[in-house]
Length: 402
Image 1 (tube, rainbow, N blue to C red):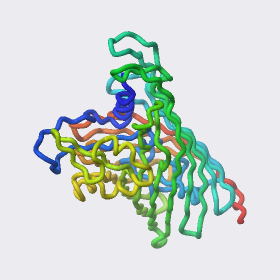
Image 2: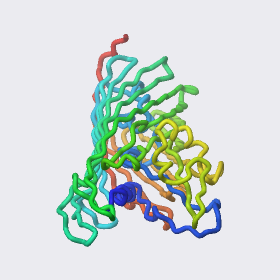
Image 3: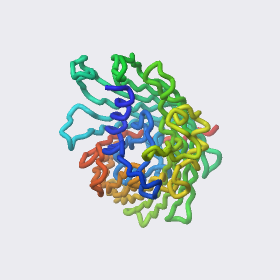
């Protein structure tokens, strides 16, 4: 299997894009032309917790919790508690009866004082056991491809309503276990792809009155060096740099009932590849894929807002939208639902989510379930139950001030 095919396979398994390579008809560029943006390590964009996953994958301005490193690191500055731990187990491709692929997330935080918090997290994705073959179908041994990312986060309040967060991340993607992969003309020795990346977040929350709260957030994640799976530097893969913005409205109806509504919008900060239809290439910025792969990370982030071959309308289609709702009864039982939308020309993931939560003392247990609403795009999490368990220790003493 070629290196590029393995990368495409990883993207396919991770994001469920069942038709990454689309046959085009030579009718010119239209609003229905499919032009997906492929990145390395797309697992970095998958919801790591059952709480947000039950609300349509919203989270940039949701109530701060142990999983804030993924959604908006600045929220850690407002998290309740002195110390907490959380973990989530996500089965993968269960609809296809795959039993050895899964995503595991571990995270924790420690409050330093009433203005700042530190956090650590680890994301690990196992693609199970794969039998490697050469171009003639001969066995080349068993592979156990896997990917992981380790984070460290610091968040600080600027005042009683506003906070900032910063995260450093080490990324490791091993799709071939160092095997030599056929590229059609011979074998290329592969290697694990490694990178470092950074996240930056801002979060604001304030009461409207005694019973209502508002919150807003913005989060830029996975800004870092490209991934290379061999010594061939001409086809390095972009990290899934992403911009997330959104808001939250919470109504504390009475002592027993609370309802929250949330909205998120996401856009990949990755350049849009050119579209080739017949012998015609459509792009104002890249003559071919070689030029596209040679685009620098910072230039790619900037151009990601205006380089789509289809113009402004295509740029708008690159935004993914999420809405969600959550109901708490006596801060003990929670019910959640949400909807995620992605344009059919950019992957077509569209699904409903449901979830519930149970909180007792310092423990919280959350479950989510995803139901696709389209037939033209598969999802590796279709009809899959995700489970999260968190533990949050709250001090009986006031947190010391700085």
